[in-house]
Length: 420
Image (tube, rainbow, N blue to C red; front, side):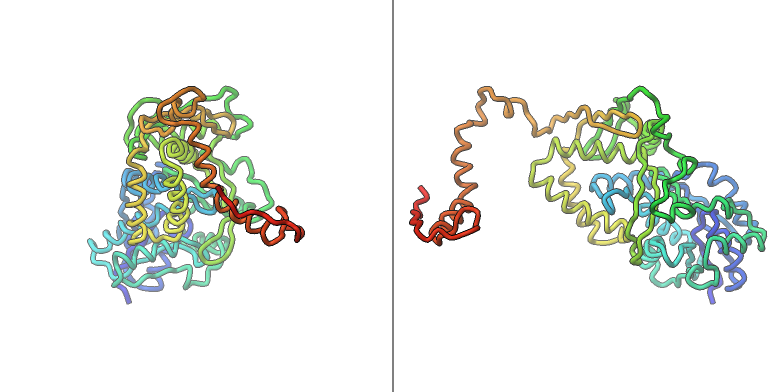
């Protein structure tokens, strides 16, 4: 039996009831690790006191915000990773960082077990435990949701009430939320019906597009080597930049995503996400790449992006595969330097300007006027060579007596195979 268990702790419903449950069932001291990843001061207020009141021996609160933005969010952004066509991976990116810090604390206090509050139906259990396997393969993992007889959030609320553990969730308002500086996710309650519209009071980061400002707002986002560095011409540290874009996008109702997604465990689930700043960054970054990258490099990167998204979603952050993709992405981002102007209006964002010293777009080459680089007469030879396979096939079909639409034979046709 473990003597010291380090628990990944958020202060929410699930982890709050795990503290007394671990003490009851394992007779071990419990040490909590809470991560500040930008979920807001209100969510962290009183977390340590709550953990201690629930029976924890200690609760460490680690400020991981800057590292989260610089080392997890921005690399994923630069890769262009989007899961299931919409999801910008806010929860997925955070788990490997939190779990690694949890392991570091466990080593410091001499723990002999790790624990988390992830349910047996979700993705986070995989993300946490893959990180544990990478950094603490010798430590056993306790996952109460896979052991206890609590089967619903209603059961969890009842357990909390019976053990005097204060929680914010109620049976009337039972959404499961995950917040960080990148996004806010909402699950549960009425959202479990995929045909039910999210209620107006669900959203917390984004204004209702219908009541958003009636005047559009332009925002200019600057990049260096694919990394966001400025807003409206003002250079900003990574964390401050994202916070400012969250505010700008949020007041215009930008960044709402309603998604029925595929969980790793095989089921589909419905989540509603608010990612205002992230939505602006993805749109601007993609547009700058479109301006700078050549066609084949852009296509190759578009092939890597969903693979990178799968890695992040599945919690395989600490893998050789991700490091290899990062090496590829880093090469593609060497010239992604410039600015993109977005116009925000009532939930929408439109690209209205883009510029880069590395732009492959050049008026001298696309104009119909004279230039020294592109000779229009060259296009004829290029087209003949490019069309050669189609011409050979068509001539061969004619030789075999097939008409151009392949609908019937023309036995009397005697085509020439001359291709000159």
